[in-house]
Amino acid sequence: MTHLIERFTEHMKSGKYNNVTVSAYRNAIFKFYNMARDMPQSQITDQFIGTYLIDLGEAKDKAEAIQAGKALKLFYEVIFSRKLGIKATGETKEQKLPDSLSKEEIKRIFYVVNNIKHKALLLLIYNSGLRISEGINLKVADLKINKKVITIWDKERIVSRDLALAPNIVGFIQQYFVKEGPIDYLFPGDSGKAYSSRNVQLFFQSALKKAGIEKSATVHTLRHSYAVHALEAGMDIHLLQNILGHRFLQTTSIYNQVAQIELSRLRSPIQDINLNEGEFTFSPY
Image 1 (cartoon, one colour):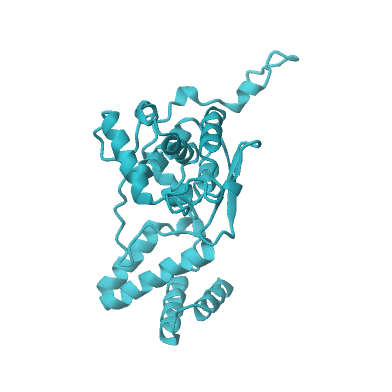
Image 2 (cartoon, one colour):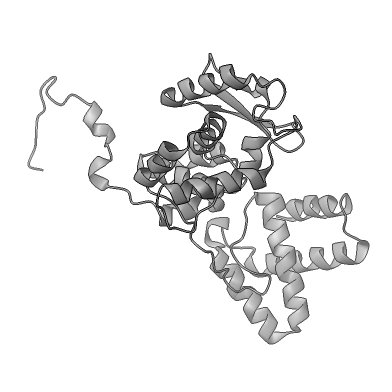
């Protein structure tokens, strides 16, 4: 564990943290380590860490406890890529469940959108649960229509992930491409630059009204809806995490609380074994 604390210390020194903060955070991690050194990581839950911080705040200076909380949250994020679901005080974060639309409601939205450019953009966003920024910043080069794939880049266009296009939306994308002939940005605005997110939200709100949907939804709700529907269809949550571009699995797992998974639709691997082949001998003992 000490080598991990040293790595954490080097991380802070190479960043924006001054010597006073580095020393304070390092000491806070050592104090926590000395208390929990004999425990396996699997038992050091968010609740355990939260209780430790709350007790620390009650026994010592409140400010010192909050600083320890900040240190532990940063330590677990840097070293274990784990985002603690607690505040720096140790209290549990109240996480609001994401709103989503039903498949029927999404179908109604697509049905009332007549503008081929608007329809193509919304289809792509729901197809892969894209953030609105990812959708409007797509470049023509990111679309590989023959392979039925789109490439999504991070803000610096350094890290990317390839996502599959559903067969039933390819025709709409091709129709848009032929009609509009985009050159650089796949969905350019009047200036030729990326389409503004405000305009996308405006035509989405118009579509909601035309479709008779009174829910308080935004374009981002399409992303939430994709995640919920993907889990309900049986997608593995780790695959969903990769598709959505979440750094932490905890971020993706919130959709488990919304998805309504029918156990009768889940397939057991034993169904792929032909039990009629060969002879089975059963013993009562």
